[in-house]
Amino acid sequence: MYEWIVEIMTGKVYLIGAGPGDPELLTLKAYRLLKMADVVLYDRLVGKDIIALIPETAEKMYVGKAKSMHSLPQEEINSLLAAKAKEGNMVVRLKGGDPFIFGRGGEELEELIEEEVPFEVVPGVTAAAGCAAYAGIPLTHRDYAQSVRFLTGHLKDGTTELPWEELVHPAQTLVIYMGLTGLKDISASLIRFGMKPSMPVAIVEKGTTSEQRVFTSTMEDIYDVATKNEAKSPALLIIGEVVTLQKKLEWYGKY
Ligand code: SAH
Image (cartoon, rainbow, N blue to C red; front, side, top):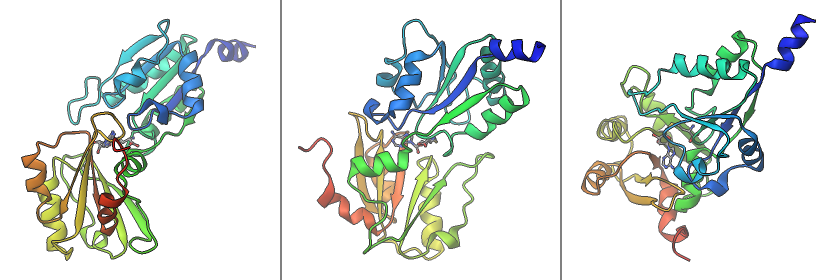
């Protein structure tokens, strides 16, 4: 009986991927749930156009997530989610891109399980898919790449230690999230481990938004290009022969 009452009173948490920026890349499910939310906790990467879709009646909570400068520590976000749901709210936890790709979605759910708070997960368009599409770079292509690998350029301890040898594999596209800060090191390491210095590279900054910028260059020159253009976060690195298609397939903002 008591358990039954608790069940009725406890709300639910919806861990939702908001996509990389363009609000039209929200899924129908994400949109519908967002419109029903009592409380919305969102990150720095969720763009203002998507924030604007949050109902006025909902409590909006910015919980930040600037790299190594969280405005709320991860543990506090985790317990806040559980606490808000336990008050009986329908809580939306909105994250940039997809919650399970470099999004710490897993960590937040583990806490909810411990607290016995029910939840659902709604996938989102991850930055790799969104940026590649809006930049005109197919991540795979029968002539150039049979596999694609998503990596983070920023590890928990602040270093960039990647399995470099595996990354210079031919016919593979690399997509590096959070790779801008470590770009100099990343390109030097890849070249040192055998990647050709002329390997095409793209940086997609603020992909899928109206402020999107795309820079293409080679592995040996990309750092200078990024510096010269003052490339800023959020930015994604795409490395591989597929990047050569960008000039031909570029469409966003063009037609
Ligand atoms: N869960 C997110 C990734 C979070 S990690 C997802 O699935 O997309 C944050 C990193 O994602 C940023 O540092 C950047 O590398 C990348 N990113 C997110 N949105 C982006 C955007 N609109 N344009 C370019 N890169 C983006």
